[in-house]
Length: 344
Image (cartoon, rainbow, N blue to C red):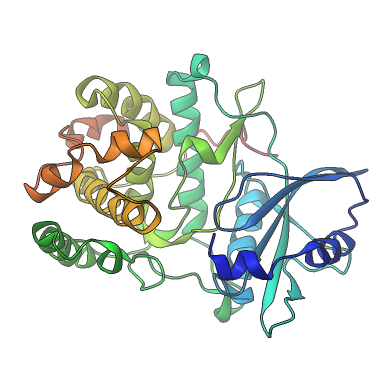
């Protein structure tokens, strides 16, 4: 979290937010949060999550765009943790920080269940995951923000990708690869059938699974307009990080079966997955350079991810060497199944 945001936060801000959402003393506790202050709270009407961000990161209009789309998806039967109104009927509460800016409070229904256990990491989960992403994409085709000011950014907007700002200057070859990659991705068509609002970060750390196996997705803070295959590639990026040749088919075949039960996407888009995986790889490396001392990586996952990464990227090696076009049959067709497994 930015120090300037952390420095402006205090108990008075939290107390104000609690009053606005009817949270009684002792019924709220702090959770881990990277870019915002996150809390769990309970009221007589259920369990909820409170997010307190700052206008330095997102404007009230952008957050309105996030929660309006989120609630639109929930109304369409997608398994997402919908936003709830404050005591005054607001989805975004603005709380003055005392220095001319605002903290922005938003509350959400707490997702049922918990993080997917390793024992549940199987074809059934992958298929449900694909079904959820497919339903979101299908619904997004007909979504228009009710207020033009609420429109979320494009995937390649300045506020979404900050790669060149944080990649080290000496990474000349990686910077060159990134520029060529962006020229290719930005030239792709952006038609209704393949482009719309996407989550952009729908990995397993951003959903819970209940006892019945239903998934509830949350953390829509980074939602943008992007290619549907980009959203899919982001899922694959995190779901398959080792043993690519074996684990990619194990994940992708059931995932795409679930996806096609909800949405039709031309299988030709499968050929673009490697490019979007590479985009995420370069973006991740830039974020690590922004947030960590790369000469002394103490975080085990970050250290593993960065081991030899810069050299492989400079050589232009793919993030995942699998030919994704082999999954065309799993993606083809459009099932008539419109099950509501993910409805709240």
